[in-house]
Image (cartoon, rainbow over all chains, first blue to last red; front, top):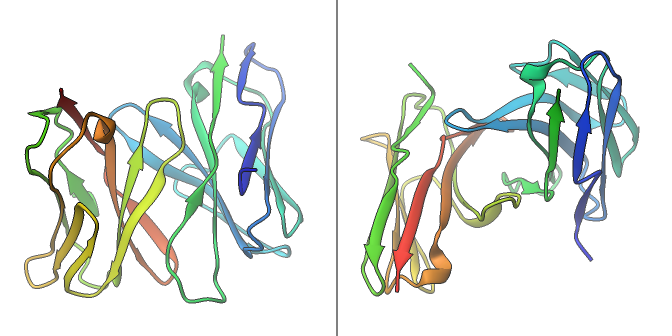
Length: 114
Length: 109
């Protein structure tokens, strides 16, 4: 079983709809991240959380919100989706306690906003 | 100026060739350096990471960090068609991560 899972894997929605993307991990990591990936732009950080009570904005947080429901769960919401939020979204985790400064990614959610 | 610069390619090589992928960076505070491999429609997969300057080898892959030049490289020996993917470099400091845009590699049988 994958250590970092994302649901749904693909989603098509319409402008103005509220969308939630979910991420779960079994790695036992304390830190979780949401990124979006666009061709030619690489990975852009949306939000990150170092523990359940800690939520931080990344470089492109406008139009997005997050919820850290438990150490293993981190969800991303688009309150009112717009077409330029069409992208590939990745959740990632890292282990802050170990000192190992690496991230582990989920399989991604392909979101299309019409 | 971006924190991390990476040539997007695309790079196309024959099977068996040695591949060199490179990134430059501007922040001298970066401490950890990583390479990820991303197959089409998949999430990035950690290949290697190194701390500070020097070389690290893992099978056909060698990661090299030159902090004085702010330059990192990934070498792939005896490249295989299964190595065809996008390779992302990444760097971190204080648990903040910065990614290159990725280099697309195709290994032709």
